[in-house]
Image (cartoon, rainbow, N blue to C red):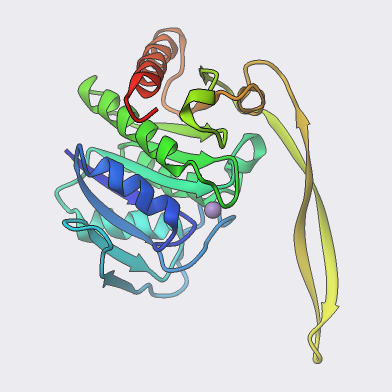
Length: 261
Ligand code: MN
């Protein structure tokens, strides 16, 4: 099995390497990710200037890693066209520091990388943990390994995009897993002005978000200390939603019954 890993926090981010450390137990892992933090660039693809890609020294043996002077989506395109020409079984983007819930998915670079995998017809997972400076990347990484294993073993090979968010909790404090829909999480944006000595500038600041805790949504699941899996592409109709439910519950059972939990 071959898994492509990318992210939007940059190729040296702790969350990415925590993820790779677990995934390499079950697959050959190839890392292609932006050379710097590209959080918030969404699905953006660079079409107006050339891109550079450099092989970096990987902190983990046996894992090939490339850094891309571009967006998360650029990284996935270059990976699939140049690095893993014979294809991969799965694309995983993350582990992002900070949640990607509700409206966030439309600007999330973490989701943007996974969207690109999906466009190439691959099952893809965007994975985020609802904290900055998280101590529980290992829980999210183990969940990703279990989910990847289920997806491959159940031959879920067509294009599907799962947006997965975890509360920042040790595994024994997780209250369950929910297959959800996107919730509403509205930001009150602020624009702060300043002057750099020559020109005025503006900073867009994300203010405190307003949460609408509607049952069945991703925002609600995390508030309940549960893991949220939101199918963003694919066909979450009756049958496949049930299928996804069964995958989610199987993964959660394995996560909480494992020795490391
Ligand atoms: Mn990010």
